[in-house]
Amino acid sequence: MSTYQAHFRIWRGDPGGGELTDYTVEVHDGEVVLDIVHRLQATQAPDLAVRWNCKAGKCGSCSAEINGRPRLMCMTRMSVFARDEVVTVTPMRAFPVVRDLVTDVSFNYVKAREIPAFVPPAGLGPGEYRMRQEDVDRSQEFRKCIECFLCQDTCHVVRDHEENKEAFAGPRFLMRVAELDMHPLDAAEEAGLDRRRTAQEEHGLGYCNITKCCTEVCPESIRITDNALIPLKERVVDRKYDPLVWLGKTIRRRKA
Image (cartoon, rainbow, N blue to C red; front, side):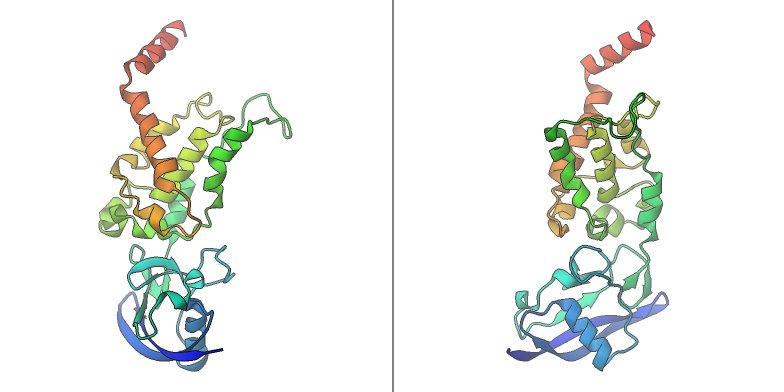
């Protein structure tokens, strides 16, 4: 096994301020950035704060920015960097710093609670739901989300404009709205809930300008923009501007 000395720069600080601190640390073949952070904790910086859990790319806890790109530390291999390259690790920029590499991601849980849950169809009990396989396949991709919030972090709508957070749910939760709107058994409309209207008016779908930056950083390779956000935008536009849709709604209201 070969080893070498790597140059790391890690942000150290708290809400009151901080700075990048330089470290030289040993690296072994096959290691990931989280391994190096753990070695720093064990040998040079025992008070370094970092959030992690599974170290297998499934819990989404160790999100950070590595050389300016939002990544999971446990899924970023040291082999992607040149041996003489400085590896800079900073906390996610879109969220408030708690300490060192740990950020306060409670914004995301607030937005999650704002999304109305799946509405079961009336008259069907547990075990009686039936779906076609193509409907299962369409939304299955979105269920791979590990809620690392890297897509939320890289989305410039909140990353560069803190004031937008109140009105914008972000790509992760707009994807959730899209998943529910695509679900053939979701009876939201029958219950008086218009998911497409709320996506636009309450969750800020119009703020998204489909730059695909969220898709680019997703560790699960979910095509957030192409398969969730763009189709949701299309359905919102159809509902609001399509004259045939308007006519159909008008006729239904008159019959009622």
